[in-house]
Image (cartoon, rainbow, N blue to C red; front, side, top):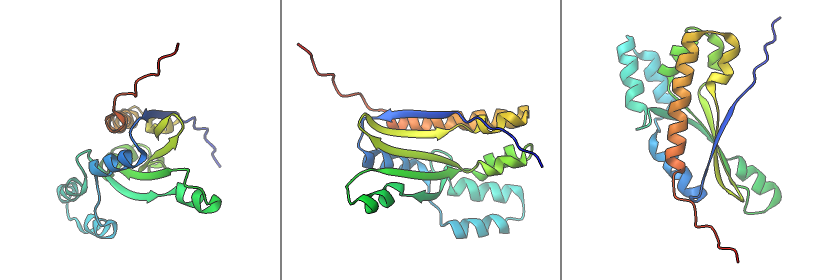
Length: 174
């Protein structure tokens, strides 16, 4: 039996946009295929080139596909009856990127597709992501880490683009 310690780095950025606007912006950059049909089509692909076309056609402008969405806030709101919190977990990724990591580290499939967490707090809407490179670092494979770092950069750039909006003006103090 092997146990491996994994220290995870969490990237987080804050947006001053509304929760709804942030969720909508993320929705617009992700692909939204019928997951059952997408999975069948991937399985039916006779060649890697066919598979690549299926994935590329399903991906959104970001290069990512939304695989699942969990409205964690809805569960908490039902529990309390309050209109908040607003918390959404989106599972997204690209099977071609995952395959580039999993060929070196099969355990990479435990960490991908990745999760983006969007939650509203008093200081703004937080967009958070656990870095894939931090998950794979303990395995020590340079090639998998290179792909993971590229994935991290791509996800983080997407989240910063979504969050980008000028901060509200600071109130003047007397």
